Image (cartoon, rainbow, N blue to C red):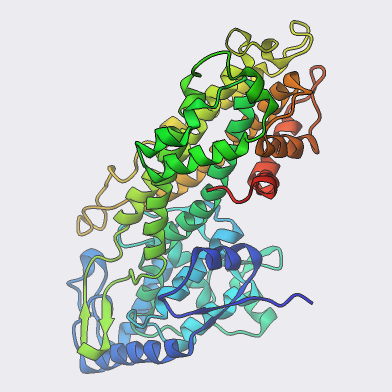
Length: 511
């Protein structure tokens, strides 16, 4: 019997591993016992301010440019409901299930801190949704990432009051249908609760969190695939010498150089051809510098995401001990926006240099291998067109890598006159990463074909593990065949982590 893991949320200590576990492996969540007291204290403070007739933004006033409109206490509950149903106006394809679960998790985690004015019953309802697998339908477009992710988070929040739609047990259905099936009733929102649910950087941060984890795997896999290309092209090992990288000690560069040395260790191919020339083209020689720079960028993004997943990002913030509500700007997505723009560039560069190695592999004038890696070229086109596909993808990435964070556009009658576009930065970062995985997969397929022409010389330990892994699913292409399924197989091996696991089983964990 498999014991289901449970993540205890306190708002301070959530890890990326736990985000992935909840999002993709169905881990359950529970509130830390200390959270209940903090949550109740914040909720009680808000209720008392409403009873006192205090003017507090978003509690007894309108929102955005309507902040100067005072709302009487008897209408404070209607204010919160109206906020959610009016702001739930997104468009586009719904976010996938794993991302929705990550969004729900991060929202619960920030609300447990007790600075948002949420009530315990409302927060518990969101916990129940996550644990029961009730996943709100959240359209992917509609956030400018300024007052947080108002639009997509409103689509999440309206399901708590019985509105909108959810995915449940593999079906898309009205929320009330799912609630009846699990014997839950909609919550009745109190003052501030709508704003607590829909104001914050949760969506962009959830996208970023899953991107970081997936990129860590892809970037290591890219090192392994590059090693296959290096050996197929009879590259020389001199550029990976430790002494060179100690003189320019960027962490990422040193890690990749170390990986390359381990991957090609014991290679009969490298040993035979290393005296043929003193240096290779940049796409081989500069693997540590290019892959390493992307690694360093990813590390920066990871640090920002780890801060954000344990932060309070809504507005106003409730400080019960001080009897104050402070209207600030923690909802602004700029930290994640810039980080995910940086992320997109880093992932795009992994694809860019990968495509250059593919091009070198299929060009017989550069590779010394048969034209387009075909045994009978002319009648066979071999791997001519997969390089076209890779070229089209990296060109697409070049457009997507334009930073979103420099493209502010004012909203809410210029009350919100600078926005981050952080959610789009995160969304296109995801797209760039997925594109990079496709290019690396094409490189793996192409490099494995090229490596065959050096057999029976044995490749390095790590290189051979990557080669053997692809060969278990895709054989050497003797003559032209339908290549699309081969690329799909290669992509599955790369994206699932199969290639990386095979390599690490032989050389140990890559840096």
